[in-house]
Image (cartoon, rainbow, N blue to C red):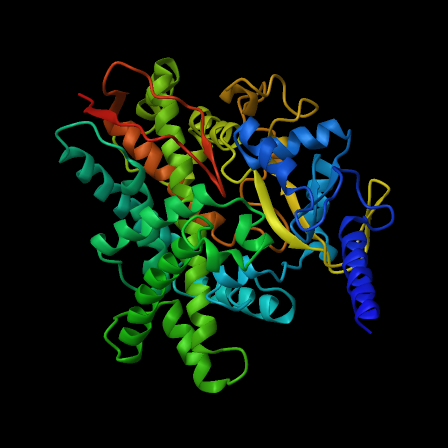
Length: 484
């Protein structure tokens, strides 16, 4: 009996090992899979060697001469797509609209697949429509939003004028974006001390995790052994901070302590007439989605723009001359994008050259899909290499060079933005793109209009980005000198 039991155990273990290393039929090419770890060790080595998950995966794809790369991290099969055709397919086709059902995503969403960022199916469709509609109803994407951005720009200029020494603009910019987002979401601003602490956690999170979720996603049990190293403690702390902010705001709305109209009031009103998916828990996760999605991406673009004009004085003066010649001292608005062509070209090149989300996703295939002759099985996790499109030599001339002029045609108009994917495309495109575009343009023009930006210590800061979940500039300080 003992021999039979041992034989069965051996057979089960052998079957598990064979299954874990056997790729599905016609699965996209990629490295060999090993038991338990898949090809995690190889991927991590390439990440360390090339400085980011995006570049590491890109090099692996080149090694296998494929634009559809098949890998396995822990027990999770993952396909990474490259090339504009494949990227556009995943962004726009319904077969790729799902989100993975993984431990990391559930942890990010306070334990459940809710909200809008990481939900899918009927829940996602209904609540995305509701969120976009009711944010617009309270002024998001309209004239009211531009007025709020201009007001925040004035606050930024006042903040700069009160600084008597060089400083890092990172938190100043991120706080302004969140203030606007939270104004439309909750009708109020987050207290500065709490907001600074939250931004520190978000910065740490971005550096600590890859788009695939890192160790926590591959081996969730590792949180019990290595809660600090795995990042579990960090995410729990961040979730608690955000939950406290959201819960306080919801309570204020229930007590009618918040004046005006905003998204939370709209959602609470809907809860009174519906008892299905319109729950307080769902409201919390949507608010969390809004805070996380908008907290760093927009401000990081501005931070890179400030860093670049600090490093390139000729570009800075060209931008300033265009602004002063066409706007003078007038308050910048989104309508000025048609006139400030070089400035817009510069900001477009910033978003190409410093791609904020070089690996987008993750998506989940809702059914078996063929791509480039390979089979992507249903429920496979898919990552989208936006960064490679932004540096594709078939699209861009000398993509490794920073050249705003590439976005200006011979008639002096903007061009080529159809090959840019800073906010994604399709039904899952970033719902806050109107805020992001307006904020980046108005705030950048406002700062350049008033200040000359110079190196603070005579040594130019590096422009080599730190690439985690998103790209961010390495810490630097700048001197803002009021123009005469």
